[in-house]
Image 1 (tube, rainbow, N blue to C red):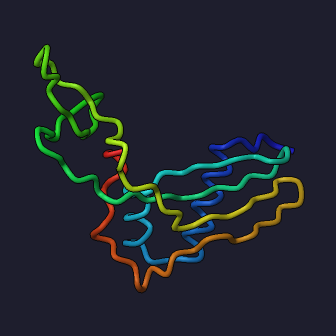
Image 2 (cartoon, rainbow, N blue to C red):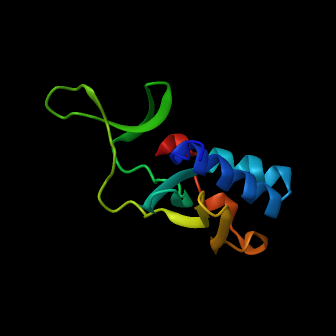
Length: 132
């Protein structure tokens, strides 16, 4: 059996998403707004989830800055005045699974899990993955 790691499983999952949803605009949106998570409960069997996150709201004193080439929320440290990246404010919304699939490299089977109703989906609520 060829190597079937997280990257390979993620690639197969995205290819299956594209097969099920041939709309190129939806595919482009997902690739910019979703992040992939996965676990391997059994060797060769991966569950891959594509998650989206509501756009974080800037709070008082926060601003958008660039860190490592990505847009992030920042806040100046009150004591030093130095900018600090805000990873989470504690009450940020959790990620929402919009697509999940279980892939078995041993049997070549795929089982669809979660699948958002994209016809009813409010795309404007979700930020680019670079915010994460």
